[in-house]
Image 1 (cartoon, one colour):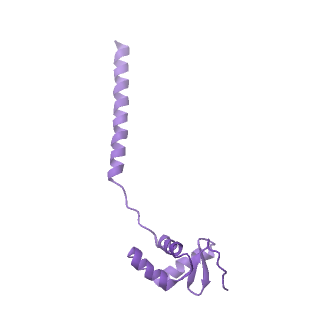
Image 2: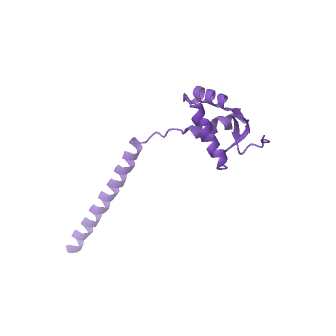
Image 3: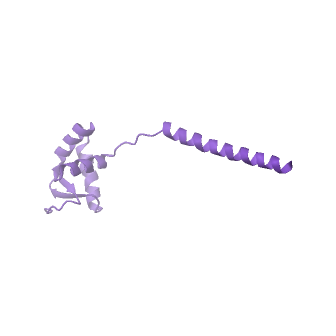
Length: 109
């Protein structure tokens, strides 16, 4: 009978472990965190949708219309310029006019 008790104990532990896994999956489904879209992602989406370079004023206007987000002009330009200087995502095509690096646009000095 000693073997039978060990077998029952094993089955009990397996069942408890399965129950914990099920409970963990159920909790994950109810506690989903809504991730906010970053300002840079908003700008990237706007430029991608436009398909051509946009002036910062147009980007700010579209962000307000589409995402209900009021972007600060100076902060936005500063953040975009940091990405440009790092060689990431954006390029400057004219003063305060930006495009995605993936565009085939001739850059102006």
